[in-house]
Length: 246
Ligand SMILES: Nc1ncnc2c1ncn2[C@@H]1O[C@H](COP(=O)(O)OP(=O)(O)OP(=O)(O)O)[C@@H](O)[C@H]1O
Image (cartoon, rainbow, N blue to C red; front, top):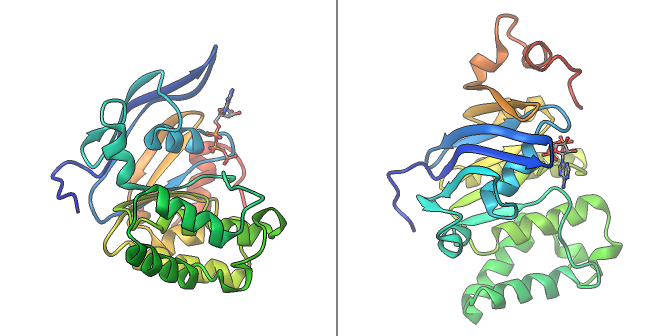
């Protein structure tokens, strides 16, 4: 367990340019230990790009990503060990089964047999994977693939979770279950999650970071996000000038 006086998640002036196109510009925020922060913004605002920069899947054009005080560019292995990352669409190995994939990942991470068994039991139960444990991932529904991705992110019991639309593709029962799981995990972990479901934010998050066209336009609590009308959707529309994504 890293005891860290620095923020657990820190974006410092992160910019990502694709040729002349600016995906993110000067994105700065930090999430302290034990906080659940929502990362909101319209489609194409730069949420996934920022999450990929924070997790080291993309290299920033400018700026710095820090996890648990470790600079992702300089201490990538130490920083990565602290992170569980649920990417937007996989990557999952379609020809493997959840059982095969998660065992393989646990072994690659150097887990002992006993620890791996305990962690597999935990993620199977928490992510409700019993029914699909031996099926090919490529043949699973979107919701089940999402749950395998969540199990992948949780397997090594990381201190920091970066979850890109964790409830996307889930039915209402599963959405409720994952929300409860995130709430439970938030008691001990630091979480940054992106979502388009504003009710979810109110239900689980302490903090809201809103991005639009690559720039942070609000960083505050739920009350600040509700604004004058007391409705997050109104404030979202007002600040981003677009329709609320559903
Ligand atoms: N490899 C790339 N090359 C060029 N442009 C890219 C690339 N990857 C992302 N972009 C662009 O960067 C912008 C930000 O994309 P990003 O996926 O981060 O948005 P997002 O906020 O996660 O959107 P969504 O809510 O739709 O998932 C978009 O305009 C996207 O088209």
